[in-house]
Image 1 (cartoon, rainbow, N blue to C red):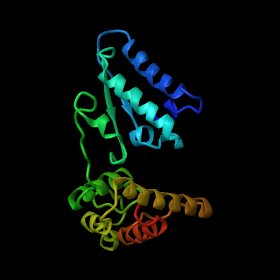
Image 2 (cartoon, rainbow, N blue to C red):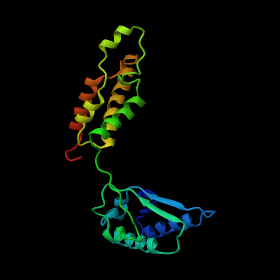
Image 3 (tube, one colour):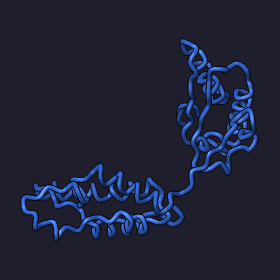
Image 4 (cartoon, one colour):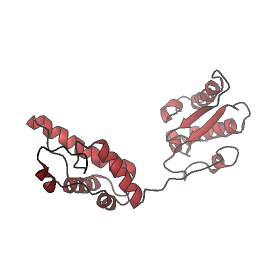
Length: 208
């Protein structure tokens, strides 16, 4: 469930849409449980959702009623939020959302693993040791292989989406160069990735 699936400019329509989602989920054939997953939950159930405090209060009240109702025994509600600070605390009580799991920013080890996943997935674009194909073995000595631990250190404070953003930045640059020259550019090495990290940091607003 996304924000646009529920929010509606007409009075009362937002609550009706929310109720209909649960009615539809409960009415699914069979006795198997149905999961309703709300993405960007804080965009729907914060005090100023949709830019209208009145609509937001009504929507929060409607969800409280639904979650404590016995009319939806098949429906399991799960939500993801950037932050729960603005979410009505009453929604997080037992019997509504029973458990809150917080995912901290990745530490050094986790960032190194994220880099490995992303760069091995695009091994043809990056100089990743063990994935190269050379006609001349002497070329190996001149390859600027990426160093995952160093990349992890250079991306301290970055979320996984930011690290992905760095690889996307490089991918777009490679595509532009390939279109302009008609030939595939060489793989990006460690130095090029470090420069891209700095470029990415400078392009992002402070605090993000």
